[in-house]
Amino acid sequence: MTFTSQLIEGRLIKRYKRFLADVCLPDGAIVTAHCPNTGSMSGCKPEQGRVWLTANDDPKRKLRYTWELVEAQPGMLACINTARPNHQARSAIEQGRIAGLSGYRLCRPEVRYGQEKSRIDLHLSGHDEWADAWVEVKNVTLCEGGTGYFPDAVTTRGQKHLRELMGQAAAGERAVLLFCVNHTGIQRVRPADHIDPTYGRLLREAADAGVEILAWQADLMVGGEPSGSLALVRSVPVNLE
Image 1: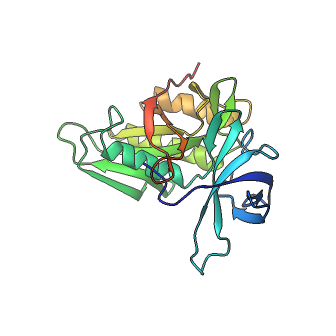
Image 2: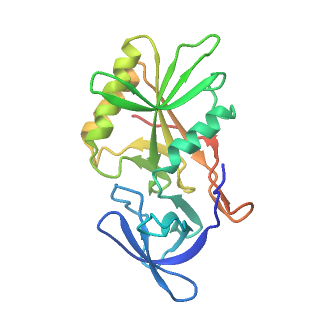
C-alpha cells in the first residue's frame, strides 16, 4: 500500500485542539493541517520534528493539508493518521500477506454486529474451511524502549470492542484483534496497563476467551513511487504477561 498523493515535508510547530497542527513548510510558509488522531499522540509530536503532509485541493475541505507521518524519534517514522490502518489491514489481507487471515473471498468494512451495536472494521467471509472472521483494527504508535503500547489514552470505545469480540468468539466465529503497528521503532506490543488498566484486563480476558490477538508492522517509508509506503509487512510478538 502506498500514498496516492505526494508527501510534503515540514516541521511541526504545535498540535492543538486535538484535530489541528501548525506546520512550517520548507519555503517558510506556516500552514494549519488536519490532525486525524483522537489519541494523546504521546511521543509523536516532537517540537520542530519532521512531519509529512498530504494536500487535497477539494474546495469543500476546510483544511487543505492532512498530517500523515512524523519522525517520532531520530530515524524512526510513525503514521499518526488513524484513517489509514483499516486500509492497510484490508490491503494486506486481500493480498494474502497476513498469515491466518488469507483465503477469504469477501472482505467488507463497517459491518454492524454485537450486543452493543458496534461496527466491525473488517468482516471476512467465504473461506472454504474457516468460520467468518470479525477483525477489529487498532493503530499502535506509542513506543517506549522498543515496546509498542496500546492504547495511548483511556479508551472506553476500545473496551467495548473487546467485549463485542468476546461475544463473537462465544458464538463460534473467529474474533480477531489486529494491532496495526505504525511505528518503525516498535519490536513488540503490550497493553498499556499504566494508561488504561481496564483495557489491559479486558484484553487478557479476550485472549483467554478465544479472541485472536495479532500485531503486524508497517514498513513506513518516504519517497519512491508515488510518494511513500504504508504496507504491513511483518508480524511482531504480542506480550500479555
